[in-house]
Length: 290
Image (cartoon, rainbow, N blue to C red; front, side, top):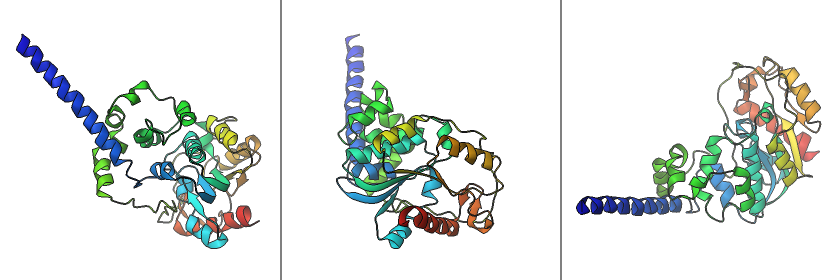
């Protein structure tokens, strides 16, 4: 029996040591100063100035070409749009930038039906896991995230978020494989032409959203709302934008600017690369240069 218990204790000891080693190896991989996603990039930015910062979902990432904005204005620009993100994700990124003493001229948020959903996207929370136990993420953000105590346990935050911060990503971090996207710009153009409709837009908009309120608290003066184009075939488009304007009167809508230019759309909700560059020029003229 003693031999059996010694064996069990030995296995537990090896397991505990292994967990601590894995936690150290994984954490070190994401703290090398090499960023492969926008969350890492934002966390690593320190005490610098960016004139124009764009936040939002893929409708920001695929529509705003910061390199073109810099060319047109002579000002610095950063696109932190995230695929599949929710409003609270963008508010978190703004909080991180504030905590890291990043100064800016204006922050732009792409406002649409996403305000009907509160909370965080699972992918965004997963991308934050390497940083939740160190000084890169400050307490005022952690209090908003409502993370479980399990994130304090060694390696568990990696094991439960393997798809985003798992073994493959650790290897790519150590290997130094760059992101396919230029993170200093953040724009990712789409190819193709079409107005395919995927589902329908909601006919009404929620009046309050925790992420919007959070962003407004962080930036009460220089936060600008805009809505990127949808194709004219989008179901409930006009109802949605009318209610959106009623609930958020400050929003600048570009929703119908390409109603006569279907060749600018990759599908009904996204512009293609040509359309995105044209939209970037229009937005720059209307919101940045005027």
